[in-house]
Length: 284
Image 1 (tube, helix red, strand yellow):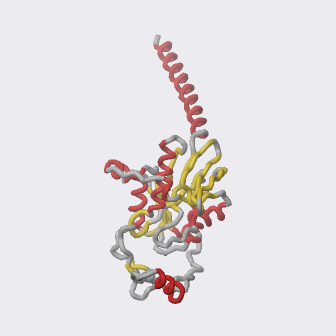
Image 2 (tube, one colour):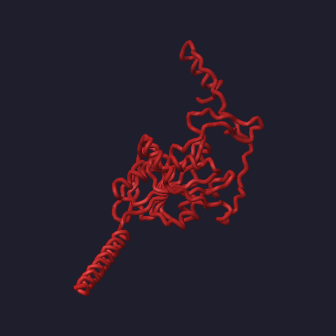
């Protein structure tokens, strides 16, 4: 009887292991066929509601004691990646940012919005667009995402260069100023803003996309999600360990506020208006 019981237990255990192995194989197969990964690049900038101050020597803007937040265009990129995940088209959303320890706040904001994990490239240097693109290239080659999303520009320097440079360095198709994204099979359709209308592009994946304001409206982040974000993983990587030369070929010569516009005047008649346009403004 004891042997029979032991034999029965052994058979059940063997059967369970076999079934467990079967399910593991099926689960592994499912994971290989699962949706894609998105890498979203975010930047910390001075909050768009803050009035920028210029340093006395006009060498740069003074951001000391200024409120910092996520770049609005990058926030839209995060929102779009999270929406794609919610629709089952993406399995993981990874956010990456470059900067000092304060950048962690921006990454936590992205995690609270729905990103799964974050990568923080630690550096105290102010990097030019090309160096930023090279840095993201190094991260991309390690993460191997299917979609790379980033804002079309940062509101602090308005360069609008990183996305294009990143696509060139990775030799990937790109779509800039994207206002609509549709994913089907292993391709992506992007609608982008152009002068006087819209342009629709079909891209093979992986691809680089830069987001326009019209793409979506970022969600309001709830307090429970803010708390959950504190438990999500943030991997820190020292910039120097990437072996990228941070030296720049660009130099800021001078920073000034926009010239103030002259106050308008009321002219008594059409002849006076034409005279001023012709002789003073020389536009006709």
